[in-house]
Length: 208
Length: 208
DNA sequence: TGTACATCAGTGAACGCGCGTTCACTGATGTAC
DNA sequence: TGTACATCAGTGAACGCGCGTTCACTGATGTAC
Image (cartoon, rainbow over all chains, first blue to last red):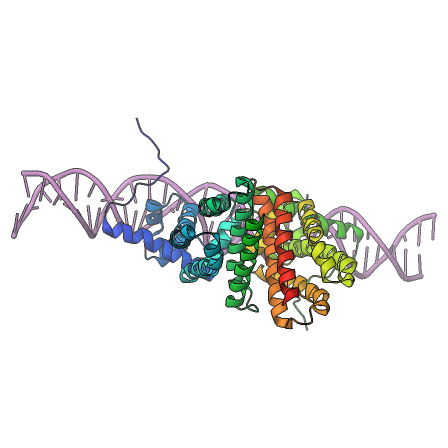
């Protein structure tokens, strides 16, 4: 009796773990250089110094590579979020509102550090089989923020709060993406304006 | 002496104008059905009841089709914007702030009416050769709003106002896109929350 | 410490496929007389 | 009103190409004795 399992076993050797990570790095670079339309498994393998079949040892297909790349970026963004929540959430909603700018800046720094980050985000946005990754991540962020805010906003119905925060998350990421496309707007200005808007939104919630 | 001209002559006959529009309609449908990754010129032509070369009479290449599709959508959105400005801008900033929700709703209605609209927007977002279309359109909207607002906000430096409005435009469109991806948030709630946020932003500007 | 051996990592060569696009052509349309 | 003719709209067949992926294989690694 045989099974065909879609999920790849994690690599056993050190060489393999490095190869796997290198494939993602290379995929990010290539996404930045040629875009989603022209990136290919053969191209990724070649740039990583591998023959085409080697890629398939680690990723089931082309989209699995992009999905892993997307998840890696979002994991890094989540780490930033967790640090921020741990630091500011216990001290109340005012404290959080006052430091929204820090969160945006830290998140933006993660994106900036990732080669081809904008294109990763765009790929997640535009590839049918990957849209769910982005949505799941945004929902996750929303829920973490909900847990952080809810205790201080007991007057607001939980699902209304969820929806507001979900929107705030979407807008935060949208602003971050805009930094890479709109060279007529200064990054610092955009981030501080978004922070201001989100702060207004939080005060608005707190008053309700 | 011969010239090779990239721009296609506009069609001369009625049949041709209908064919040209049909190609765009079909491209929108297919974008919705199979996504950017799998749409092809051959597919578009076939669905339109044409042989592949016929498409090239109207559009220089694959991206010209998508670009035309994107521009058509943005032209329709612009019409909505112009109507809104004409109606509310002369009556001052308060009047505009009070009716931001109308603008968002009208814009959203245009998107909803367009087959495959989300995928058009995503294609504009994600295809390297098309990103400029979206950016140009957002800048155009920004400038129209700037013209409408500036007379009532003489205290705010023009380029600061531009940057704020640019951001507001980006966020407005981001929220519109979100309506199609996030089924846990009610369209009406999202739109009214965005309207509220943008209103807060305008008041914030007016106070400065 | 040396080596036999099982397992893991990576290869060479090839596949069928559908892509975007072009060519030389035919059929449809509209207009001048 | 009829028709000859120029122009415009659309076709049939084919192209070279690079794609994603698979196969049966070889070389590298690590471990038990």
